[in-house]
Length: 46
Image (tube, rainbow, N blue to C red):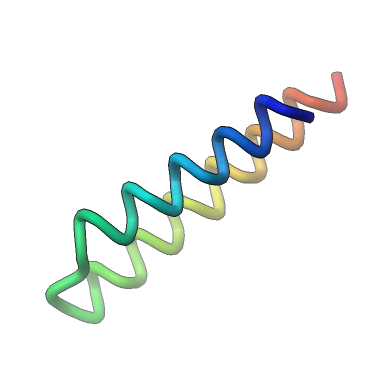
């Protein structure tokens, strides 16, 4: 569970710090964060 929280914190910081100049950038960042979250949940429930 701690790894999941750390991963989510890291993803949030990366997304905020990298910034999104366009709507496509927003969609890609959101998609990447969602995919990473799905993977983290999958790994945590193995």
